[in-house]
Length: 577
Image 1 (spheres, rainbow, N blue to C red):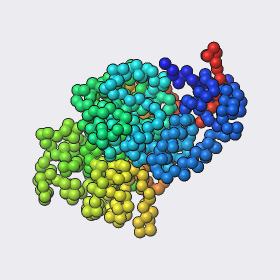
Image 2: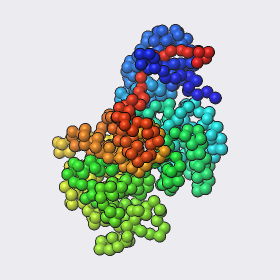
Image 3: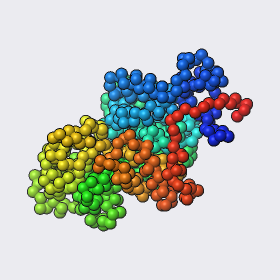
Image 4: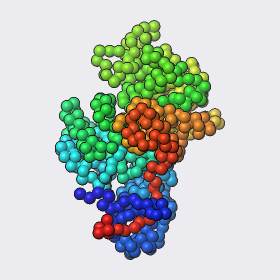
């Protein structure tokens, strides 16, 4: 089996300069994205590496390559074409892809990740061009260890895996889920400095219940109904066990699992292998950080807020759970917290009932809470909850477009000078309310952040910046800390610390009172978060690497960042290796 280490290795010379030692020559070198520099190969490298005559005569460095690519990128008419263009660059040259992405981060993150990634997932089969990552299914799961051993990456440290059952707001997407993992790992590298040759996207193709996929003659996934219950967990067990054997230092990020299994998957494996669920824990940490920022802006305390979370899926319950942890950590009792956090699902306020799903139980309210309310039906609606509880904070993770209507927003401002309204559902079409509407309906008083990128809003000659609450402010730093610390688990304390770190970054750096930072600061944010999370992992025993306990962790993090830059190449023959 051929590994990337059979092609190249990083070395440091006597002047402490890093270079790349390569073991291949000629056209092969141009066909492997990990080592291809294209027109940036110097004249001497072209001669030494048998590339002479294979490339255009002009030697153009990485900045010229980026300029040329960006010129072509700007000519593309739609976001899906731009996504395909960037994926093609990644399939030609890994370094060039990340250098391009880094230079145009704010413009391109919405293309390689949300919201455009949703379109890419939906059109996965028709867009498919080049193999990337792994797909495991019932047909090959018994060969999982062999498949992983054959994969060209030697030292996988970060795996993003999905079963594609709940992709963003578009649900079951079968084989298409692999695209979301690819996009996520792009942000791990460009934002968190994670080496792309240590990251791996994996799709668990357990079938699909989406009829249009099963009927599509071009669909590339398994054509069967989704595995469930014992058969499902038997497959996931085999996947986890194969990872433990093959890559024992790998961190697993569970991505876009439906609420029916997301909590079970996390609890089943979190003490067996270092893992976390970004939809539950990453979204929760991101939301808590934004809420802390809003409290700071209002001059209020977290423990004084009444919070209504709309949506009881993985994201909604995850947000409610992390905010609850934040309130408990701030001194409230469990009983008191229950009177500060309320969850509303498609049926209305989540109440204590016999058949309630286990993951909702911590937030279920007793029915006596609304005995004095004037209700139209037995279960309080969102509007009735807002009217009677007078919440300071309204957070949307429902995927229900327009559910935060004018009446609800106007009730919010009746009771609070600056209500916090976060319509976090994405993509944009699923947003609970358009930010321009919230600002208009609240007379410019609401503190607004969204889950997808939106343009600024001008209302009564005042410009309101609409900042995005993006999980990318959390997971790259969290993952990087876990990788560097070689963590044996991702503790609740580490997750909570990532939220506090992001909030502190905003307070330290934010000059305009923003709720979330701009995406262009992603690498600064991620290194800040990683430093704090690594310190917490060392403190609570989650990190197995203890040899740098007395080290300056910020410098350690900085020294471990992978950088998208071309290195000088030196050829070494097989006989010299």
